[in-house]
Length: 572
Image (cartoon, rainbow, N blue to C red):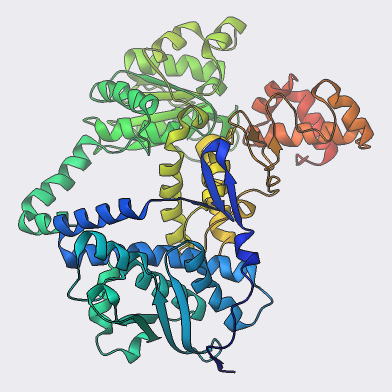
């Protein structure tokens, strides 16, 4: 049904909008719902606009401010739908003009609005009073030759297009910024404007540098080539700690020296290993990654060094191992601490002599392989415990590098989030507006025990649960969203999204010293505790029983028995 707005009809009460504004002065933040806001001097914006016009020219500056307003309009359309889900189409739409007024940008008087979301019909005429952009023209730029309310116009286009779920274009048919008596805008579907294609060009990014690239195409080609050779391969990160690690690894990349990557699970050790390979002279040779913890102990020698037919039951054919496949290139041994004693001895020979023998074969084969090993446990402690060869440890430990955990390079989190957003937008064929400011703040305060791998999973969850052209809120990121209370710098979130205040533990309502009592008060049984511990340990160990057993302080057979008893491990 088409709804027509008449001037005498009043706006819906602003209360639902004004209640979303929250001043968090102690932290220097202002919030509107989940979005962080700013209070700015109009005079500062006026100076900024003048500089842009002088530097870029009017057309480029106009496009910049149109795009600026467009992004704001998309955000506010999302807010309007959430705050007025049960209101009429007209009341929901009018939240946009009300938000413009609430932000101090302009007062809007609707003259005519005809809309029908079902059919996509839209026509609107609105008058603007006291536009901040007109004020800017009056104080800094003087009268313009064309309408000057650029960011307000971009906002109207984005807000209405998102609301109607089709492209709506507004044009400013008269503007006080260019000497007219009033600011009047008219909006209708894009196809009804004869110059729609030309106007839509303003909403496409138009960096000046592209003109330089057009004039210097050879330089552009060289730049691409250099990036490939010099290796922008070290993952995502600009923090000082991470850049220092990359610089250290870069020095080792050109040689053949063995590299030992140390760090927690999920910090990106394989990404670094591939980077070392790509930066080396072996870049055009094979790179073979092996997760030693994922291979059964009785098969690891055959997998790594090859096997001859008939060497053992099940060896039905001769096949080369991973080292032979990596000949001339690089092999990455993740979780190298899981190697059996026999595999350790063979690996030592490969490192010392460049030779190996397949399982069940007496022939010696030469291999030229660079070894990059990784572990999230202490090899030195394993040597002391007698579970890892000291001579192999010294061979692998020629160039040890500690990869920082995500919580130690938290400044890189926004870059990583953007990287994963681009990945999952393409994978799921949608485009969100990114993380809300509140969601990003929570992510910056979370400790990320699973590091970058956990962050990737959380962002993927957020993209899946969020519709296109909407911001990813905190509820979409964490299974259980923390309460909307002020977080202190020392606070963090646990793995389920609960807010954990500094010096406390998230166990029911119990105090840190009485977490056991808290479990008992909640009626948690011993079997439930044991099951939860085993599930969590297996999750942290990527379902590797040996590693999970070490986390729980058990022997592998003891944990395997308990896992089979509870059904967490197949008895087959």
